[in-house]
Each structure stands twice: as C-alpha cells, then as structure tokens.
Length: 172
Image (cartoon, rainbow, N blue to C red):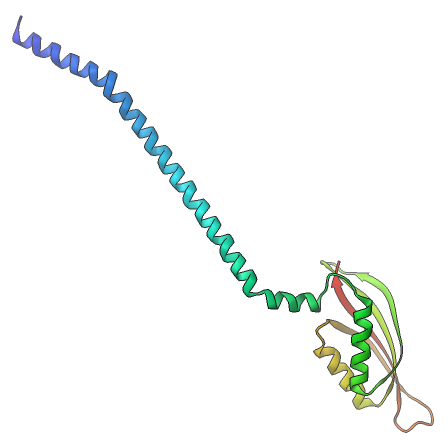
C-alpha cells in the first residue's frame, strides 16, 4: 500500500474516533458546566435571600421598642377601658373635675385606622384646661381635639364649664 493512502486512512480513522468518542464527551462537559454555573447562581441568590431575611429579623428586633410605642399610640383594639382611665388620669393630674365622659360612634378612616368619638364635660380653671391639653398631647395614645367649648359658670369666680370633643385612633 501506498504511504499516502495509509496516512489518509489513519487521519480519517482518527477524525472518526474523535467525532464518535471525544466530541460527545466534550458536549456533555459543556452542558454540565452550564448546569453548574446556573446552580451556582441559584445558590448565590438563595444565600442572598437568606441573608436579607436574617438582616430583616435583626432590624425588626432592633426596632421592637419603636414598634411597641407605635402599637401603644395606635392599638389594634379601641380599648374603651384604657381610654377612660387615661382621660380620667389626665383630668385628675391637671386639676380639672371630669363630670362626664361619653363615647360616640366609631368613624372608619380611609387607611387602616378608625377613630372613636369622645365627649368630655369638665369643670375647672383655664390653666388646668391648658395642662389637660398638654397631658393629652404627651399621652402615649393619639388624640385629636375636634372641638373645645368653654363657658363660665354664673356666679362662680373663674370656674369654667368645658366641653371637649376628642378623637382616639386605633387600627381596623
């Protein structure tokens, strides 16, 4: 046989073996590398999500005191008993006499809150009224003063009758 023919047959056999044996393995390795890269990205995303959840948990724990204060100012329930006792305490601290307290209808707010109407009838002097308003402002609970009506009792020396309409807020 001819030397060139033998070389051509050997080159053809090597090319055939390359396409039959090596190229499929190379394609499998390429597919495996692509799958590994995709899974590495998924693992990195999962680890980043887990780190974000852990950070969120730490932030929540760090802000727990602020959250508790907000929930005191805007509780989940109206708690009429708490409103009554806090208003009585504020009136007593200011030196006003609380003659009556009436709770009106609940007003649904636009957002996630609602308000309850409170009507107070008090008697006392003007500086005590200012002190009561300051006490309500300093209270942990949110109050809005809707209306203040003040009139002097006839024949009294500076004693006022005070009608005060408030709104106290809570979550729906």
